[in-house]
Structure formats: structure tokens, C-alpha cells
Length: 411
Image (cartoon, rainbow, N blue to C red; front, side):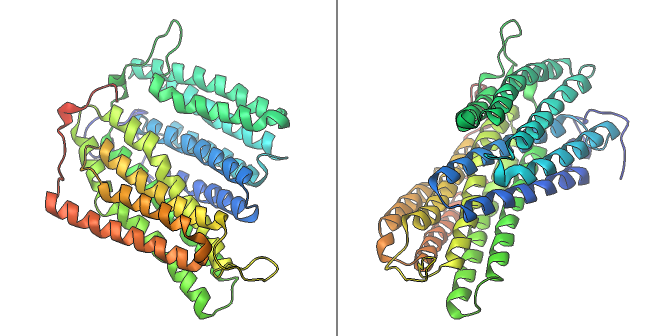
């Protein structure tokens, strides 16, 4: 592995945007973490566990995306940065083992690992940038203080079981508010958006690779579940429906959207603002949509005809399974539409109509088996994929976009 003398990424040349092998290696731990999240929801299907899963998913997303921002400024092939990533990887692996019982006996381990990763990375970055990029360094001083405030909520939640959910929700809310507030503090003020100048190409590729990881986890869940069901036509159809869901979600993002986002963020001087809106905030919707789809696919594989645990067939799908099938797909469609809007692409009416069609499908769940509902949901996604393809073909490769000059720092 090649090492570099400078701890800061160069601002030009191939190294300014290249995703390194150590970054990809770091991402591997999130395959395990995301699998843990989906399995917890599959094994304990209930609204409280769903809400806990969503909370932990957003928390893990902040851990990953904050690291992506840091490696946009720090050179991952510098020995110190490489050591940081490997240390974080170890802590994240420990954190992943605590996920299934994060709201129980694993709370302290989860919270401690999370706090060490988040605060440690920010303090390290503040120190690493103090000479070459002092404004960025001051920005990370602000971030560190915000994260220390959130750390108190994570630790308090781990120690106070009755208030854990609310305290951890407050911690995630604080994380989510930070970029929009530009980590403003009394006496230190807020970080100017111009300080967040990044390599747009690097940010776009990192986000795309993370979606590949989540899609890969969906395939792992599907393959593992298929190994536990009878090899019959119904199970094969459910397996095919699950695979089709993954392929269609891949097409919706990677057919045009990934390239459009990469080209736009790489061409505008407001790449920090676009990175914050499109890749930091909106992308988490895509992650949630894929993760919940993986859960729904396994539930359909286990009970394709709506069978209960005691083996009695129902006349349709349960609201739980139907909500996961239709809701996950709708979240993913809306996330793609919002992302396209954020990178100044065309208005995607088909995506919103698709989400409305999925809502109508949910209303019909008493009449449809989980397998039928899954195939019909895939049909909606397929229609949107086709409409998307026709739209982008009509508009041309660049799409009908607004110019980068229209982007305001208040995004």
C-alpha cells in the first residue's frame, strides 16, 4: 500500500478524488452492522423495534458519512490517517456486536464505541488540519464540542434504560442539526460554508459505494433466507421477487442518478453545500429504503402466502409485512426524487406517482398475499425505471438542469 508524506489530501490531481483501498476496507465493517440491524428487525417484528432500527440506522449513517467527509480532507494513505481508520474499524466492529441488544444489555458497549469513534475522529481531524487548513481545523473544534454534547446523551441513555430511547433520539437529532446550524457555538460562531470545499467526485463515489454495500447486504439476507425454505415454485418465485427488488433499486440510482450527482457536485463551487444536502441528508433515505426492503424480502421468503407461525393461511398480507414492502419502496423512490432535485436534475413526477401507487397497493393488502404484493411493488418500480429512462433519454445525458450559479450557500 502506497504511503504519502502529507496528511492532507491534495486539492488537484488524481489523489484529490481517488477512493483508496483503506477506505473500502473500512466500509466492510458496515456490512456486518447493517446485517445486524436487519436481522434484529426480522427476529422481533414490532413497531418499537422498527423505530429503534431506524434510530440506529441514522446513527450509523452519521458515523459513516462523517468519516467520508474527513477522508475527503485527510489523506487516507498517510500512516496516521490509516491508523485512525483501522482503529475506528475495530471500534465499529465491537459496536456492531452490540446492535442486536443495543436497547438492552448491549447499550453501554454500543454507546461507548459510538462516542469514542465520533469524538476521537473529530479531535484527530482538528489537530491534523491545524497547520495546513486552520479554518477547517476550527470547524472541527466546533464539531468536536457538538459531538461531546451528543456524547453525554449517548452515555446517559446507556445508563438510564427508561429514558434511553428519548435520550438517544435527542443525540441523533443533535447530530442531524449540526451541519444545518454549521455547528454554531457562542464565541466561536458558525463555520462558513465556503470552508467545506470538498472533492465532489470523491464524495459522490463514496456515497455510491455505500449504497452498493447496503444493496449487497440485501442480497446476503435474501440468499441466507432462501437456504432455509423449501425448494418449491412458491419459494423460487419469492426469491426471484427479492432479487428483482434489489436490481430495480440499483437501476433507479445507478442508471442516471449517480452520474448526474457526481457531474454536478464536481462542477459547482458550492460543492460543500451540495455535499451537505444531497449526500449527507438525503442519502440516508436511500439507505433506509434498501434496508427495510431487505427485511421485507426475507419476511416474504419465509411466509410468501401469508402464513402465520402456526401454519394457518390468511386471506392476504398483514399490515406489518405490507407496510414494509410498500413503505420501503416508497421511501426509496422519494429519496431518489429528492436527490435528483438537490443536484438540479429534472422533476421526477414518476417517482411521486410511484409512491402514491404503492400507498394504493398497501390499501389492498387484505386481498393480496405477501408474494403477490411484492411482485406488484416491483411492477411499480419497473414502471418508474422505464419512465426514468425515457425522461433522461428525452432530456439528453445532462438532463434538464439548472446552472451551478443558481446554488446558494443557504442550501
